[in-house]
Figure: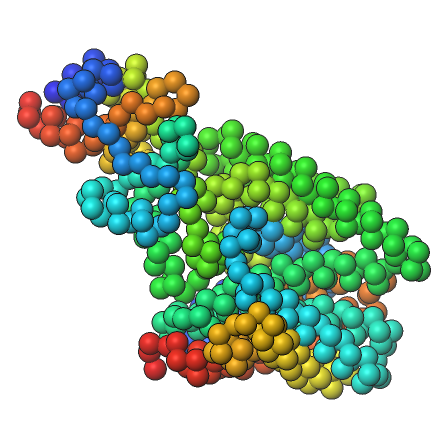
Length: 147
Length: 394
């Protein structure tokens, strides 16, 4: 199956595995994001703007390191302000997140997903509109089925 | 003995690191270790034996190091976060900084110390240096005692914000005391301050644009350092305030690219420890016993006036902003620590020919007071959070 990944496009994969990523609004608090990720048992959350365009990504680790900031002995001025002012998702998100396009092959995508340590990679269409998500867990499951 | 600046810098850095490793084994403050390392290489000790000449080459280094700190402070907060800070934090920060500045300035001026240089200049320089605190020391105490509550939150906000106010007032003070006349001062103020902010804002905008466009994270640090070097060079050539220029770059970049905090600032924040080693080791190396003895009475006045000013300022501001009782009663004790920013600003006085006469005296006063505050400050912070009932560990 792993070899087949070279020939499967992201669009084809999404037809058989129609998954959607977890989305939150830019003004969501870190507590809300952590609760959502815990409820969904996921590590990745994407931030969408009012037009439903994906504008950023936050990992569970990033959210938790903000929530547990008071337990860390050293903080920069920036981290102090973020802690005191209850920074929002839009202020802490990574705007340079990894994503996949529908016409790419899975092989290209897997490298990106592993390199950025992302479980659920968002798939975007024109103007960053959401098409779906590729779950690493499903890729591995498919791969093991055929081996 | 060679007078190689690189050799001297290397010796200072290695001595500072080795002593700080030793200090950490005995749970002693690392910044004191950096300062003692510098002190060992001062003119009165090993520096005299080996013929070290620190003053000549350290100016550019101090300028770059301060620019790094000013950039991180400027970019530490977005406009939206400033709005959310709340009245109590804003009032208390203004109260403690203004209180310390006024009290130190008046105390030194009316004491009329018998030192070289103009008394009012010494008074105003020490006054603005009294504004900042030491976030690192405060955060360490809060972490140690697992403190949580209104006092702790206000304290974190105040120590994060007052460094910015300290840098701004220091820049304004430099414009004032380095001008030949009042009219000259007004003219220079316009050019130095507004010019610095405009140039910084433009460079910051370009930096944010590039930071957004360039995907490869490896380019970010060179980009930021390039922008800072360029800004400091332009500030020197065009006679702009170097600190305000660097601060404006940070603030502008973060405003244009609000979610770029991690991207544009995290890489440079890793350099902060290096900057503080440089500040303290250089300050220690500038220590001169004869100058210290000449100003020992000023050290005592500065220490007491700064503490009293901060306490009175916070009490008034807390009352005005209807702060919780714990904040009104105890926050003043918690803002005593003083560290890197004050040392760095004091070191930068050597860059200004008009202030050469007082630079060594002021630096020695700030270094000595910082070391004393380093011992007393955490104890006072601990007292405040314990009395406020916000500690969960004894």
